Length: 313
Length: 258
Image 1 (cartoon, each protein chain N blue to C red):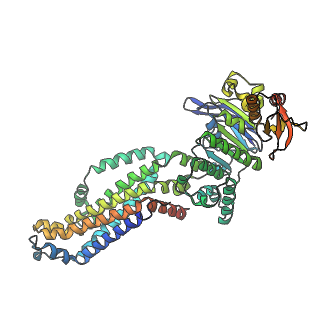
Image 2 (cartoon, rainbow over the protein chains, first blue to last red; image 1 turned 90 degrees about the vertical axis):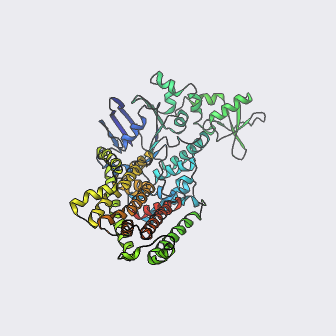
Image 3 (cartoon, rainbow over the protein chains, first blue to last red; image 1 turned 135 degrees about the vertical axis):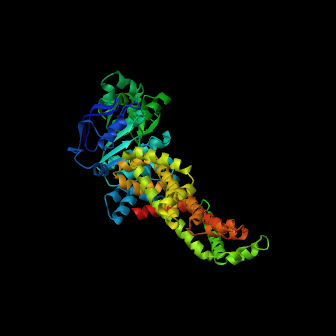
């Protein structure tokens, strides 16, 4: 758990972060979002003390982060950044092994752990001895995430970790990361300026502007009760649609019922956004929901879609 | 991975050939002279000759030890300059080193003789001081050129200042530093020739006496091997700098230092 309490940091006259307070619950993913220069990266760096706070305190699992040496603190927190920052002179294996080496793990344990992580990010085999220059952008980002996870830290700080890949690959990386996160349940603070990414990933979203946190809440609550016009404007007029992208059809469909052969069919795994898009495209108010095998298991209509935003997701 | 697999091998082969030629010349200097004597008027009989291999040894010891010492001093200073508290020191070093490059090494040599006398010592001092400059500048530049996000990642993962230097910054700056070492060694090899004017021995001895007695063959006796030695050193360092070689070294260095 991360608790940020009234933290302030100035760069010269400019307040990069001003009396910011934020809580990230154990095992949840909080997205920090805001326009560039709003202080979101600085807030992230205050947590692992790459930047030192002037005022306020930051508790990590209840413990003030100033109580440990900065280096030790950072070794216990996963850190992944936009430009990846892989060490160009080291192989994928050695890059991922960085923090375990700093923590003086045995070579055998390191090798096992790296193999495990490589399997998790789908880069097994010959990848281990490749150099960063030989990887594609998406592969490098995956290695960056694996490196952050290497010593199995309970906490993860991610500063636009998928920022430098093309949109298609970004969505893929996000889904992969969500699967990993579902399994590992790390406490994650994730910085982005991309609303789509925030909505896809965040259990909660904190909107920042000019060093202040304007509102921190679950994604659906931000649209139901925004704290002010900036939050609404920043999230954009399509935010409602984006929220639908979070929720799979299977969660809100009506199970059973007769399978009308004239209705278009939709897979249970796709999101409500895609289901809605299909309804509009086909002029249908109800869709038949089918399983992976093509067997109809229920139906979904506009009424259920409209309910989605009312329920906490 | 398949990029120019034979290229480093060839570069090394050229270096070895050149080195063999150098050895041959030094050990069988009569060969060069008998080749050159009919073409140029030789007067060598008048001079008491030191065997060429003795001169070669003096030259190598002089250039080698000064290069090694200036390398250590320069890297130490360069690393010191990379610390955040040493910003002013760094600016001073860069200014001093560009100033010093306009200052001929002959002048250092001439200026030090009145203080420490003739012979090996003033030459040693001049070469040592002069050899520092290229390595120092390249160490500073090399460390500065390490990408900021790589340094940031290293910090973020919990490396201390020394760990960052050892595991990340020095290995990445190594190719640039190596280029500085090459320049420094070659400067020292050629500048060591001047040591002969103050009695430090080396290949400069036949050159100086050849000039004095207007004997071109005697001049060649010193000039050809010293030129060849510089070429050998240059070729050896360039082979080291070659992409794959450099990468292998960086990898090896990374393991060795980790």
